Image (cartoon, rainbow, N blue to C red; front, side, top):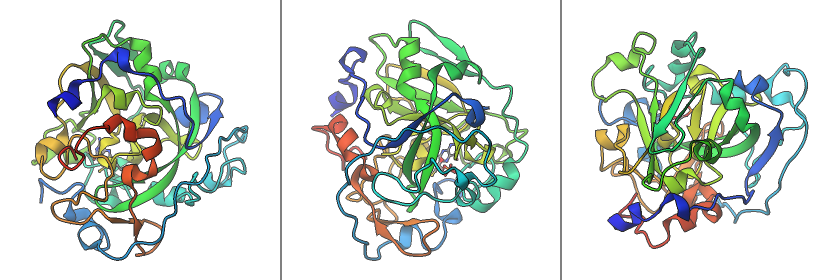
Length: 345
Ligand code: MTE
C-alpha cells in the first residue's frame, strides 16, 4: 500500500474542473481579504452531545441533489449582518442550510489559543494578521513568497462547504477563497514532489496555547499532491463575504471539505512541496486516532467514539447521518481507488 501513497506524480494530475459544489465568483480578495495530548479534537473540549456519545439513530439523508453553479454580484457594501446578502444561497447543494456567522465564529477549534471552543474568539481578538507572508517552496521550480496582496492574483470565489470535525460536530460555511491548485501550479512542482506540507504560524507571545505542553508546535498538516490539486481544496481568506476573523484561521487557511476538520489548517505561513509523506501535528500526537488521510468515513470509528453520526452546531442535540467523504464522494472517491480506506484512515 506504500505504492498507493506514492504513485502520483505531478505529471499524472489533471486539475478537477467539475463544479459540483455551490459556488459563485467574486471580484477579488477585496472585502474578504483584506488530556493534554489526545484531545482533538479531544474529549475535554467536546460538548457532551458530540463524538463519544454519538451513537443515536441517523436522520435520513438522501442522495446528492443535482448540482447548481451560481453566479452573481456581491453586494457593494458590507451588509449590516453577514447573512443579509440576497445573492448568497441559504443552503449548500444538498439543501443543507448554512450555519449562522455568529455560530461559525464563536465555536472554534484553534488549539494555539485554547482548547475551549467558546473562548477562542475572545483570546484571538487582536491577533496580528498583517503584515503576513506565506512562503511556498520545497520541490518547485519557482519558489515564491506571497503577501496578502500577492494572493489576489488567484482571484476569489465563494463556496459553500460542509465542514465535519472529527469530534462529531459539523457546520455549513460560505467560505471566500481560491483553489489551492492555482497556487501550486504557479510555483511549478518538480517531478519529485509527491506531497504538500503546510505549517501554521508559531507565535507563542500572541497564542497562549503554544506555551503549553503536549503538542509539537507549530501546527502542521499535509496532503498527497493529487489531493491538493483537487478543485475542492480551497485556500480561504474570508467567510460570509467578510475578512476571515482570527478565530477561523486568519489571514489565510486551508479548507479540505471531504476530510475531517483538523486537516483544514489555519493561519498558514509555509507551504512546501516534498517527496515523502510529511509528519503532522495530530498524526504525531496520536497516530491511532488521527490518520494522515483523515477522510470523513462513517465506516471507520474513532477508537473512542462512533463516526456514524454528527451534530450540526445549531441544530440542538439532533444527530444526522455522516456521509462518506462528507458527501463529496463524487468528486474525490477516485483519488483513493484501490486503497483500503480502513487501513488508511
Ligand atoms: N489549525 C490550526 N492551526 N490549529 C488548530 O487547532 N484545528 C482544526 C482546524 N485547523 C486547528 C486548525 C480543527 S480540529 C478543526 S475542526 C477546524 O480547524 C475548525 O475550524 P473552525 O474553527 O473555523 O470551524
